[in-house]
Length: 145
Image (cartoon, rainbow, N blue to C red; front, side, top):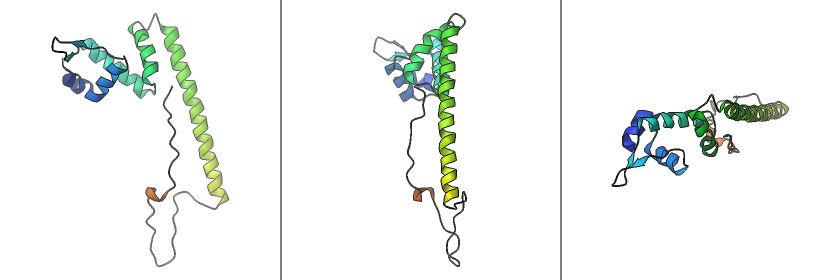
């Protein structure tokens, strides 16, 4: 099947499929004209890749896990170790986020700020607080590495 067909069948964009190839996660066959050609096995592989991405793994970790998924029984120890390490990282990140939330609550309490309360002067009605008025969020990449 061609790349568009695989994208439709798996729900993955053509751009993502090309990225998977670039990251050595997927290796399609090529026609004599150089067009990508995918098999049913590639369809299964793309779904596995999606499962791993959804679980939070990055492409470099997925690249090491894919060969082990060919025979999960034989590679049970590697897979178990990888999943255990991922769970430990997520638990650590969860504790970090919970700590940050607690610190934010304490700050709000210290300054007498109740969550989701926005008050203006009388007769002016309710204020029109929007998320855009908030201070920019310190974005941290929380993907598994």
